[in-house]
Amino acid sequence: MNAEKVFTNGKIYTVNENRDWAEAVAIDDGKIIFVGSDSDAKDYIGKSTEVVDLQGKMMLPGFMDGHCHPVLAAHYTSGVYLEIDYDLDTCLAEIRKYVNEHPDKKTYFGLGYAEWLFDEKGPKKEMLDAICADKPMLMLGSGGHEGWANSKALEMAGITKDTADPIPGFQYYGRDEQGNPSGHLMETIPLLSVMGELPFFDDEVIKGLLSEISAGYAAMGVTSVADMGIFRSMADKGIKMVKDAIDSGKFVQRFTGCGGIIESDDRIEEHLDHLAALHEKYDDDRFRINFVKIINDGTLESRSAALTTPYCEDGSVVETMISGDRLAEIGLMAAKRGLDMHIHALGDASARESLKMMKAIREAGYDDMRVTNAHTQMVLAEDRPLFGKYDLIANTTTVWHYGNPDMIPVIGERADDTFTLKSIIDGGAKLSLGSDFPVDEYGREPLKGIEMGVTRQLYDRPDSPVLKPESEKLSVDDCIAGYTINIAYQLHVEDRMGSIEKGKYADFVILEKNLFEIPAAEIHNVKVCETIVEGKTVYQA
Image (tube, rainbow, N blue to C red; front, side, top):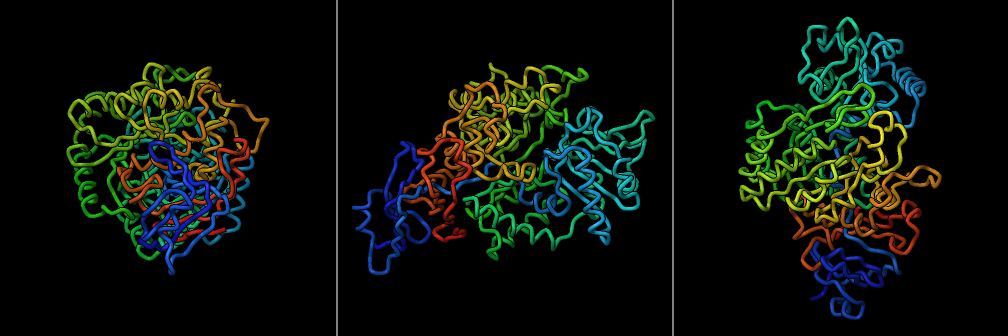
């Protein structure tokens, strides 16, 4: 048969089961109809066939982002952006500058301060009051799990000395010595009690930012995203915005979502029923809702990750939000509804709870349910082989894989035993890579993620510390699979996406250089030449 388009003279890494290479690919009607040699590809070239000479460039399956938040990103990036390496004075100066440049705004919102700028008691409202006392202000930390509010925001949201902490020790309001709210908001329910009650966001601005986010992804070679978190209060509107953007061609990536985050053990069965209804309504390869998302702990930077041993600073211990039989019960309820699961489990105690849940799910006979352990920063050595045993997908963000001395005061020598993904995948588990965007702005660039997964060092900073243990460095192939076929498996679409094979969608990224033929430290400089979704070019350099 004649193809619509044939790519020839390429270095095509198929990422199929055998990790085969090819020279040519033929596509028709948005799907791949041939993969092989240049000579055999001639059989697919007719008078109307467009022939593209790749000139030795590398072709890969389109990159996929296995954990991101584009809908939240459109909200969170609509205000002041604070870079993670800003010191406190710079953060305050940037916030003041934004307020001065936007005097007509009724509220001020921002994202990105480094949580380690403050001790375990967090930031204080008085610092923001000094910048603007008569309008509500809310800044989110870089991890998205804590916030910093001024007095006006607390007042307008009705947060007082008498406001109870939703989950003491995990989701709570920072307090001063008299018990009054200090301005520090820890985890989602306290954040939403301010963010969800006050008018920080404009719908038209959000719609425009969604389109910009999609264009940015296309320029990075990303053809599919897994939106793994939007707050339930924002979910219905956010889902409609993305669906409309996809239908109008303003959002070009394939989109898989979770339709709302479970932030507490409250009305869970009702939420699962709602997700099942969304899955029945939205279930095609451009737009699908099929994940349950649970936040089961926080972050190390916020001292809210659940660890099996105490934090160094004050000896505090953080428990998981849901544990034991109850977590297994929720997993089984999701499985019965045909849903997959994505669970934020960053600390070693929360990873252990994920594994206990997986044991129950597999023993109940749900062999095909896809469950992902998000972030996977700390896992006890004895638990690492269990990821493979129970087919728990290990998700991480490799741009976080670098030596960070700021973590030593927080967790001590354990800072040299984090992100042990090589050991986990050597035990038979699948590795899924994602950006956690907008928590990390450059984290959504897969080429930077591949480089840092391989080097465990900040890109473009050869003198920066390497994250120990160095034996946990990933290979280029590990990382490519983590951005392609393994995410397709996570999303339950590995039979039609994630590799360059006959019958799959023609989703490709074309790179100027072969990633296997250059030093790892140069990968982030490789140019994305073209991004293709279902046979159509969505980006071209």
